[in-house]
Figure 1 (tube, helix red, strand yellow):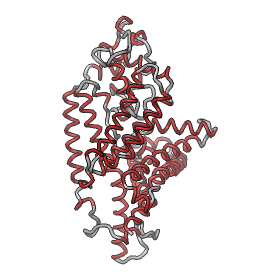
Figure 2: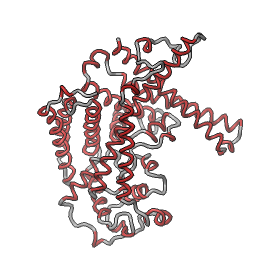
Figure 3: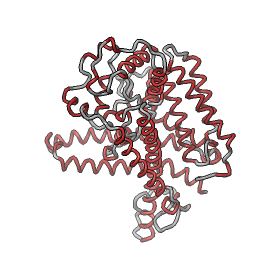
Figure 4: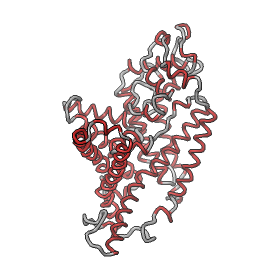
Length: 461
């Protein structure tokens, strides 16, 4: 994991300086009401390319370098969405709304109704750069009119202050708009009287950060990470593609049975290495940024909901990616996908529009994940190719299609066989969810076999 011999301070400054210039150029552009977008976009693209090409020299740790490379790409993608797809009038309306809501004292409490005389008269000073920070370092567009739709469910449900604030603040464009109550009466008594405590928020995130650190230490322990059934590491026989040993083999001998068990655990191992490290590392960085933002007073605790949703909500492939997995790239990649569909002349109302849109979003995500190994380990990609990353993501859409067809047919059958009342029985719902969890696990393991197995077999050859 560590490559100390590659550590070179002068070279490591190149991606840092390029990233700093990328942040500076985009921050300066957004901080001004009339941004020079035709200059900022190519300038930001140049800095992104320089930082990405030198991501391998950012540190001596491949995991950190991978996170850094993805951060640069995701940040540029989000900046391109703000600068290229959001009109100047929309951005200025959002700036005005943010400046007005920022003048509420205390934020989210009884001071939500202000008069016109309290509205800010100018947009200059540090507020412009804080607005840039709120917009650019916010890929989920949390609290804005472009907010990712499913993000509210992760903020704590319908009783969340962040949820209510996000919905109610989007349409505020002048101080007079705030003369009406900004929050529902039933929420005011539950949430506004008890705003989140900054010290408690920081302590909870510190505790979560410590737990994730311990989990990462255990996960990256070589004796545990490479452990397989039988107490030995992976070997060449594990990568043989025969099609009949995924879960069970037709033979009944003990050797065949143990090989089937080993093959199954190996595929589960591949699923875990695609989920666990990203979940722990990205959540840890998210906690660090949340602690810094809240401790310095730039952010409110309600502006930092968890990056990932609950794993209990991932009982379908679609919900795995929409309700559990992070959605850092969804807003920008979704805008790019809609543009492609518009160029192709596919209307949003067309039956195939939804799945075509999903294919484009996952395809772009696969390209991003393929670029990173090409930047960090080009020798491996030249030898075996890294296109398995694209297939890994694109295949998820076909899993959504399969489960969508099954859900449609089963919905018809259960109403015909059991009547509409069966969907309200808790035991029946729990059984369906358990089957859903097994289906998601099976699908992820199958995708891992179709994509990651040939690549790993090539490396082991």
